[in-house]
Image 1 (cartoon, rainbow, N blue to C red):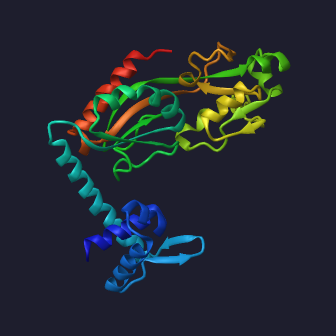
Image 2 (image 1 turned 180 degrees about the vertical axis):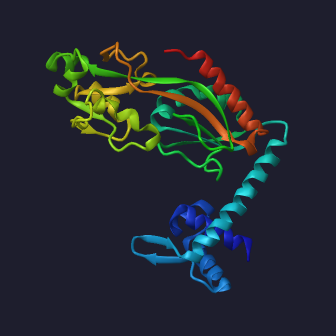
Image 3 (image 1 turned 60 degrees about the horizontal axis):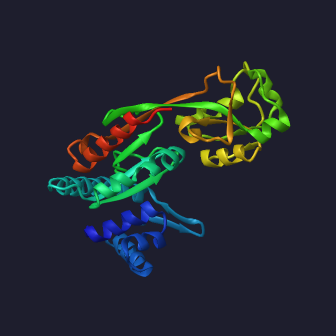
Amino acid sequence: MDLDKLRVFHAVVEAKSFTHAADELRLNQSTVSRQVSALEEELGITLFQRHARGLNLTEQGEMLHGATKEIFGIVARTQSALTDSREKPKGVFKVTATVGFGTHWLMPRMRDFIESYPDIELQVILADEELNLSDREADVAIRMRQPVEPDLIQRKLFDVRYHIYASKDYLHRRGEPRSIEDLDRHALITYGDAPSEIRSVNWLADVGRNGSGPRTPAVTVNQLTAMLLLCEAGVGLACLPDYLTHGNDRLVRLLCTIDGPTFGVHLCYPESLKGSKRVSVFREFILRLARDWTF
């Protein structure tokens, strides 16, 4: 099998379209389509079911994708090891974090790292769903829970705590809740259908209900930044993390004696990257930030 054709096939599967794969490979779409067709002809099988809504892999396509994933994973790891054998850290370096934490805590602090290591091509992927580090979807992750994968090196950074907040305007109009039971009479802003690893962000809807079902929120929005903006606009109460509200004089913390959910923030990366200079300098940078940050 021709390696170039396999690379094109792999790119189409990962991009989920011929068009996006062509952009990724810097080829025109007709070339990508011809390469895949030639691979199908060479193997004597159909790799994709093409339909109006996109592409689906056939059973044989799934088998081949498993092989190409392993092959190009080895190539990526080898390329990374060769890059890191040089004296100075350089090359593509992918960091992933949740949208809220990455936007409001990590990004404002990244300038020093970027300026200190100009030869590192930093790519930041913000997603509330966890990326697969073993498949090199990212090199390093900052997660809101302790990783369970056995092949990941991990280091706890600190705890993130959630508290209840409202705007001054909302409290002027609706009054301040004095107990958990009072939450039943207030408009709530919740995250909605959260990934399992951060499901307790909807604590505000469930706390104190004693099995009677969650409170019905005024609005759900699957992004912490949007929750913050709604809260600041006086829409309702929201359970927000300390990194998001630190220094915010537009919000008032409520029911201060009641603790919301706590997430342990962990830095993690694959065992195969423990010798990586890029990982090493980023780890030391993040650990220094973590030591210096208090709330």
